[in-house]
Image 1 (spheres, rainbow, N blue to C red):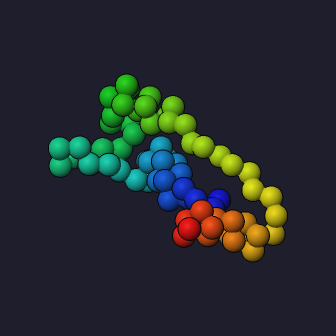
Image 2: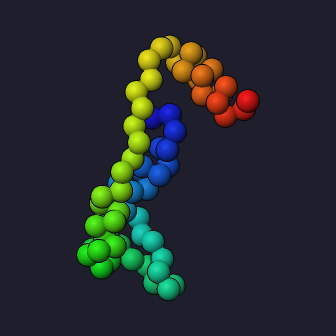
Length: 68
């Protein structure tokens, strides 16, 4: 995973009850959310791009987009 790793892992940890969010100063785990709020998280779409090439080629391409 090149980008978005933190977001992806946070979503997975939240859904596995290993991570909480705070709403109105209350810790909330996925099983304590309203159904419609949990549905938004469970149905959140992640964009996935498959990169081909060597590790250096991929890093060089990403660097071009980020720093130019």
